[in-house]
Image 1 (tube, one colour):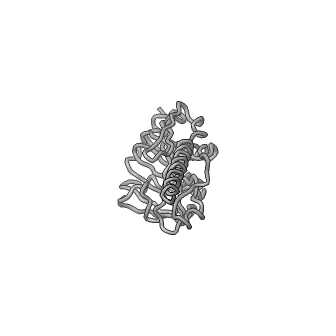
Image 2 (cartoon, rainbow, N blue to C red):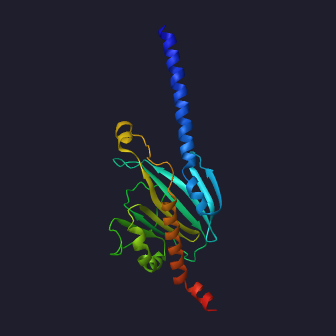
Length: 224
């Protein structure tokens, strides 16, 4: 009798676990569905962990979108980051990384950047600014444009490279009960809101516009 009950329990537990896994898979795959219409020629996909990805074009620029779950920082609730990358050549010749609230475990951010720069007074004081040779000039030029963007507490990182621009924002924060009891991550979000996505795209547009306005080569081409 006990053996039969145990077998039934195993079967029921397995079936219930399969249902939960399918539900989790659908949730991960649908997270960016409401944002696809914001891009031209959108293409939804999934990464290796099953989280939604999105590719398309915005104002003629190639855009890559992905979600990054972050559970590495001890005594902090898990975070779900939304990363939006605009892939367009920038005539910076350097890398500039602006990171809010650094914890030393930002695996998605570039490391070993050799130079650190002072934080402007208009920026949040908990900001770390790093870069390669020549990034000091880019830092100074973009400081006024970055100030209102960094004032949003959801902003985690703004990264400039010769290949493009990437913004990382908080899409959701893990629920406290799940984390405290099970040290697991459960994010109370059904889908990423189009409004949040629109805000990131607008911030990226302003940064690219500022880069074109401060780029001597671009200004020369316009004058010609």
